[in-house]
Amino acid sequence: MRESTLSEVKGAVTRRATVLVIGVIALQLLFVASFVGALHEPRLKDVPFGVVASPQPLAERTANRLDELPGSPLDPRVLPDEEAAREQVMNRDVDGALLVSPTGTTDTLLVATGGGRTLATALGTLTGTLGEAQGRTVRTVDVAPASRHDFNSLSSFYVVVGWCVGAYLCASILAISAGARPANPTRAATRLGTMTLVSLVGGLGGALIVGPILGAVPGSVWALWGLGALTVFAVGATTLALQELFGITGVGLAILLIVIAGNPSAGGALPLPMLPPFWQAIGPALPPGAGTWAARSISYFDGNDMASSLSVLSAWAVGGVLVTLLAAMRRHRRAAEPEPAGGGSGGAAGRAGSGA
Image (tube, helix red, strand yellow):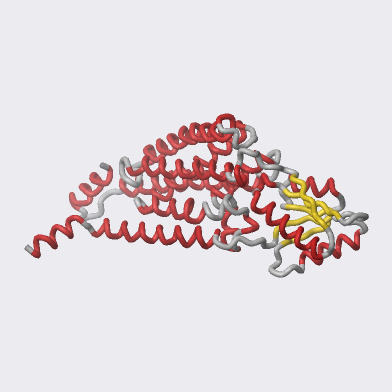
């Protein structure tokens, strides 16, 4: 009876299932560590910040005083005038700018809630506290205001997350439906072609939902469609490449890369300058971070400062295509190689099983 029960247990929980369960637990713990580690203690750190004051020595003294604040919350630089400050905020070169009044005691803080309301609020609190300590007041001017339908400027982030999730789920289904690794280059190319169609449909759907349907963001639907298609394809091609290299384990690696590492570092829930150094460093290089930055640029900054983000997404897309096709061709060539002497029918049967 005991042997029968033990046999049933072994039959129900195979070695492969055990390994997969351990992998899922590892992903679960990494998810908790990544999200809580990135988001549990937001603070300003080296935020690009402009200073406008006259005469020039006053501007330099103000910048130096801000640069020496405990914890280095700001990375100040002197700007020539208000016009330059507004231009740099709109170009996303700085996240805020302080215009020091030369005659009165009321200064002006330029912010952009379209780039993240949390960051704009934190800058307002910091400069207001500093001004109060010197007997001055600070009024805030929003240069690139977020839509009133875009709570905390998160809609751009959420649509990118949706694009990414749909992409790796679709790529996973395409691969798992007929084996985690394509048997030949034609099948790999077909899956990439399918991902292209999915990208066009998913990108357009997301752009329509956050734009005309819900009115969450005011950006160009055409630009958002293009960004969505590129984001979906980049993530989908990367997932296919990981599956081609590592089989079913590639699904877990895609989740690790896109969800566990990519989402908390994307600058969505917390803008990049408020993230810890590690997440702040990796965020712009991963598809969720690049997509979120570009989506906000389209929505609130007239499409400024998108070249780097689009380059990152394009690199993931091209890399995913090349790895998927090259790995499939390599496996196909190896499968077509003549059997070594003594290989017998076992090798041929093995290849036939693999092709099936």
